[in-house]
Amino acid sequence: MFHLIFATPALVVIARWLLPLGLPLAAKAALAILLLLASQFHLWNRLSSGSVFAPEFPRAVVLLLNGAFGAIALLAVLQIALDLGALATALVQRSAVAIPDGVRLAAAGLAVLLAVVGVAQAARVPPVRDVAVAIPGLPPAFEGYRLLQLTDLHLSRLFPAPWARAVVARANGANADLIVVTGDFIDGSVAMRRDDVAPLADLSAPDGVLAIPGNHEYFFDYPAWMRHLAGLGLTLLPNAHAVLARGDSRLVVAGVTDASAPGAGQPGPDLAAALAGAPPGAPVVLLDHQPRAAKRAASRGVALQLSGHTHGGMILGLDRLVARGNNGFVSGTYAVGGMTLHVGNGTGIWPGFALRLGRPSEMTRFTLRVAAG
Image (cartoon, rainbow, N blue to C red; front, side, top):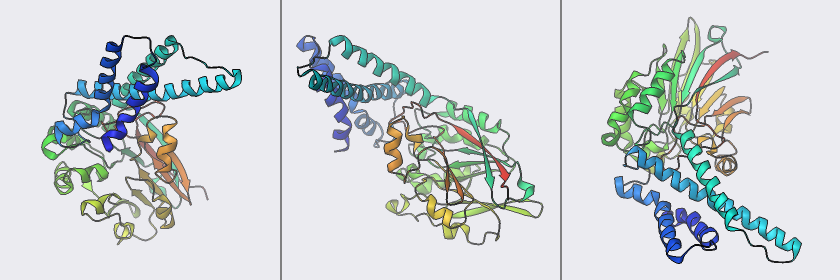
C-alpha cells in the first residue's frame, strides 16, 4: 500500500500528461515505464538497505532519484492545475478545451526546474539563522546567552561525512554558549552510519552539546544509537535535564524522548520525569523533537521549547498539510500560552523526500533576553 500511494503521482502524470501528448506509442510506453520506476524510489531504498528510510546508493544516485521523484510529484500538481483551468474555461465557453502539447511540455520543464532547485536547497549546508527570545524570569546573568539548535540532520548517503564536517565547522563557528540537537540524527544503522556521524564528536561549545532522540533513531536500534552518540561526547537527555550555572543563577535544559518511542518498546516522553529535581524557579528550555505537545509543555511552565520533525513542511503549500498533523505547528516561532515554541525547518532532511521550496534548511542561533516586566 505504501508503494502504491507513492506511485499515484506517476499514474496521474501518465494518464493526464503523457497519454494526450502527440508522441509515438512506443515512446509513451518507454516514458511510462521510466515514470513508474522513478516513482518507486522508496521500494529501491528498501531493497538497498532493508528500510525505506535509508537509501544505500551513491550520493549522486540519491540526488537523482529525489530529483526525479520530486519532478513527478510537481508535474502531477501542475497537470491537475492545467486540467482544472481547462475545465473552468470549457464551462465558461461551453465547448471543449484542449491543452496544447507546448503547454504540457512547458509544465514538465517547470517541474524539472523546480525539482532541481528544491533538491539543491535541501542538500546544502545551511546558514545560521538568528532568533532573539525573551524569557520570563531569565536571570540577568544569562542575558545574551546564545544557544545553537541543530535538528533533523538525517546523516545518510545524502548527508555523508563531508557534509557533517561542514555543518560541524559552521556550528562551532557560531560561537554559541551551548549546542543542542533535537533529534533525527540518522537514517541507517550504526554499522551503516558510523563514518557519517563521526564528525559530530567535534561539536564544541563552552557548555557542551545536549541532545535528544527523534523518531528516526527508533527505526534503527535505538539503544545502540544512544550508546554510540553518547560515545561521541554528546550529553543525551531522554526524559532528563541538565542545569546550567552562571554564578548563583540557574537555567534548566530538559529533554524528552520522542512520541514514537512506545511503538519501539521504549519509554515515551515524560516531562514530569524530565523536570524531576530541577531547581525551582529556574527558567526551563525544553527539547522535544515533535512540536505537537507544545501546549502541554506551556502548561508546565516551560519558557522555550525547541522542536523539529516537520522539516518546515518542505514546500510552501504542502506545509499547511504538515501543520495539520502537528497541531498547527510547522515552521518558525509561535507564542503558546506564555511559552515560546520554535519549530526548526531542519538542518538536513529525510533522504526519501529531499525537496525544499520556500522552506529553507537552517541551523538556528537563539539569543536569550530578559523579558520586560
